[in-house]
Length: 352
Image 1: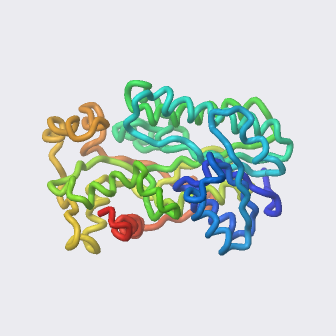
Image 2: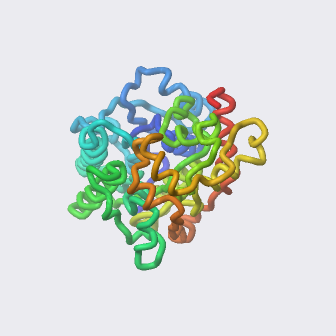
């Protein structure tokens, strides 16, 4: 049981990221000193939104240069911290070299952060942003679990370097984390495993992320003839940040936490936008037939190969989120609020 001291600084890796932004805000609002590990502390554009948050909150922020692949680059940032949040990891579905672009940064980055934690006597708890992708690859995997839905006991066994390398990278990184944790007794480990994350970013540049790429296609006419009924989980970025915070400061917190609000699909997400934006944007209103996707999917998007379509389209996604509700007291925002707030950012920035 770990009770981190709120007067001690807290390290957040990848502090300029989408989830990390809201986590940093929460920590600052609680009056905590944040050690923000970023690639380039001198890049004013990248850290401007964090500086604004710090000005408006009782907490304070200090920046440290770090590189996921450089050993020892988190040493300085971790000094004096009892609690470490490791949120930095690449997210992309289409990459040239999966080993170089996804696997190495995810696994080696996790290794570097945790080895530094073991060399930093003050560290008592590490919270890692993993993913539901470390639990499953395709929606069909949910139906092949003992309970017919994903739980924290399940691990992704179907992803590989050749098929769905992003989930594979998250699986290898989280497994590496638990392996390192078992070989020491100084700090405990908690993983937050979110499903598909949406909601408003604090960082204005986050609208270029993979999550927003899909949302943009909802609103720019790309999918106006229909959208795949592709089974996924959805969770609001603000709830994911809250989950991280509670995982850090709840003494009894332990193990993995599925952080997913809704068992849903892309059609339902689009339909949540219709009441507010249906008259102003060419939002998809119906499901694309699976047979049609089998023909045109691979031409539209490299990630939509036939195996992916077969295993996810018209296949329901199910996960059990009772552990995080019961143990951390996390409650989740409704789909409509998450979708509207996220889409409004694209409208405000004239992206759709």
